[in-house]
Amino acid sequence: MKKVLEGSHAVSEAVRLAKVQVMSAYPITPQTHIVEALSEYCTDGTMAARFLLVESEHSAMAAVIGASSGGARTFTATSSQGLALMHELLHWASAARLPIIMAEVNRALAPGWNIWMDQTDSLAQRDTGWIQLYCEDGQDVFDTTLQAYRLAEAVNLPVMVVLDAFFLSHTFEPVDVPDQDLVDRFLPPFSPRIELNTSDPFALGQMAPPTVYMEMRHDIQKAMEQVPEIFSKVEQEFAAIFGRSYGPVERVHCDDAQVIMVVTGTAASTCRKVISDLRSQGEKVGMLKLKMFRPFPTDLIRENLGSVQKVAVVDRNFSFGASGIFAQEIRAALCNRNGHPPVFGYITGLGGRDVTPEILAEIYWKTKNSAFPENESVWVGLNE
Amino acid sequence: MYEIRFHGRGGQGTVVASILLAKAFFNAGYYVQTFPLFGVERRGAPVEAYLRLDKEKILVRSNIYTPDHVVVQDAKLLDRVDVTAGLKKGGSILINLKDIPDTMETFSGFRFAFVDANQIAVNNGLGSRTQPIINTAMIGAFARVMEMPHLDMITGAIENEIHVKTDQNVSAARQAYDAVTLFGMLENKCGNP
Image 1 (cartoon, rainbow over the protein chains, first blue to last red):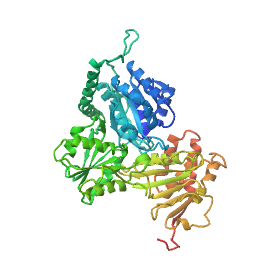
Image 2 (cartoon, each protein chain N blue to C red; image 1 turned 90 degrees about the vertical axis):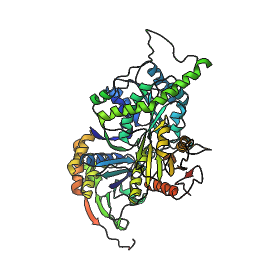
Image 3 (cartoon, rainbow over the protein chains, first blue to last red; image 1 turned 30 degrees about the vertical axis):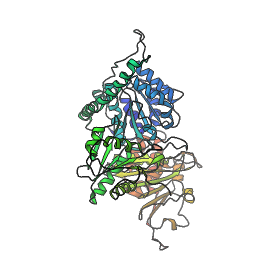
Image 4 (cartoon, each protein chain N blue to C red; image 1 turned 90 degrees about the horizontal axis):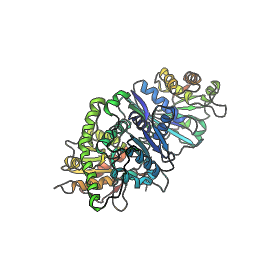
């Protein structure tokens, strides 16, 4: 049934319907309403799950690592400083091959204290071995959370479902929340490959000497390489039941486009409107929405951007001393392809600064009117 | 697309008013999108909430800068906040006010309306005289100003969402709908554009 739901609660509803068994969270800012609703579901009996309130995000991740090792379907959520505190255990979760799902609300890192929308927190965790999926609206984040369980449990890797602070997490909009029996058809109970059991004890996470460590890391990469195919299969099955699919990337008016804008998160939604307005003025502009960031969809990037005239990447994040992080990855994906287009990098919308239709149009015009990027990054919307 | 901005104070149920109105319009067949001004919530501090309505899926996810309608839940905010900032010419402004203000100059070029939501709330036992709970009265009045959605959609949303003093809130919305004073478009006497 469609109902008007806050983005945070779209995640909570998906977690409820996924019949998650163990959740943990540190409930203080920058935490969001996601776990607030889930703790109520556990208290009032809506969910038959254990909700572990812990003393830090580091412990929150440790708790779901323990629960997942014991064979439970797990969930946690965090943001900004909380995600940064988890860093050590993010590596642990992926290297232990645990299919943990975490909602990560993109919030700016301090100081200055901010907690508004900013992608640097999740992108700073790009090398931790987590699959990362960026969401555009309430329906997308609901659907992605459900799909994440199928994907994670198939490849034994954790998934970070990433959503914009406020522009998605605190925004109410219509979201279709299906009945439990439909979700059950899509997502069967978790059948873990590894399951600690007191009746048949064994140890996990033991010493891995140089003779095996490298192979273990190679196995993680092999699992990552399976993700695009498995994600596509999961999406097909999801579409057969719910009628919606998204893809690791989405092409919007790309066929005859001379400039393609690469956009993520809620800015991609705003950009759809901008593209359609520019198209009606005769501009040959398209958008490639990037949903999957890890594994990075290199082949799809080459296929969709390799022969366009210009690429404009919108980054709501920044790697100091370098450039926007999405722009870096797109440049890297294209650089070994002959005759690849110039990649223009734009930094905007940091720390909750609004990315308006005007900002996105400005980025298009700047790109169209420049032959080649003057700098690796152009900051748009800075106050003078 | 219609864009609506609510002004209130922390603790006045401004965000709830916007959500209730969104749900009423959703039940009336609209796509809706509502969100608070993203900031730190403090009781008594000026707050804003935004609502977009459209017959098509709403794509723009940035803040609202040029609303079609403005709702002001506390008349004292008029001294502190530029409530007509960005308000489209011919747009409406609805204020919770006891009586006609001394000067209407600020509102020239707009459709002006007011309702004594404080009194209506108190009459219905909602809050206290010093802290009346006026948000349901305000959305009832708003349905009259905008001429939509149907009052039944407003009362339906209140019945679904408000589980404390539901009947009193419904009655406040109905009374405010009837009590609102509408001025229509105010002429621009100053000659400013």
